[in-house]
Amino acid sequence: HAEAQAKEVVELQHKLRQALENVRQAESTRQALNDALTLNGSLQAKLDEIIDFSGVERYIDTPVKRYSSGMYVRLAFAVAAHLESEILIIDEVLAVGDAEFQKKCLGKMNDATSKEGRTVLFVSHNMAAVQNLCTKGIYLKQGEIVYQGAIKETIDKYLITAQEDSSITALVNREDRS
Image (tube, helix red, strand yellow):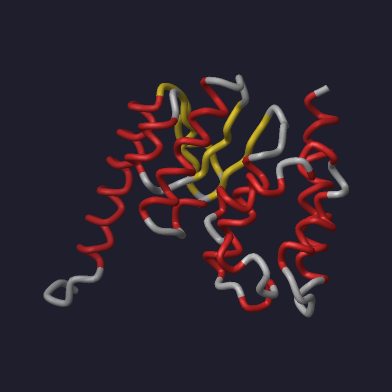
């Protein structure tokens, strides 16, 4: 069941990305979204909610090609967050947007887990956000699992390793040493 839903989400994301790319020359982002969301009836009904959440309502009738990367990410997160999938995959979405949008994103992810019973796979270097949102963590380094467990311990391992790595780099790069 979860595999089928994951496939549906990936297909929808692909179709949405394709639709948004195809409308770079379109007159209206609203129309592009409307066309893309017709692929998923439950999202079609949430069009206004998605636009409102994204914070780009003022520019929704502007062609996508004129959007900044931050506006595009806001819109993409809003669509993904309103999908009714069991798993929500969020990769560094907090790296863009202002503090208000980041707060909305964290609130939406928190609601997804606590109120809707969904799983959020949250990828971030923002340790405060990770600690606030997550109960379990996986620390990856160069694609390998370094540690997995409770979030506090995972963050501690990450920070210790990061500190050790920066200390080694600092010593290696010293010009007064040969």
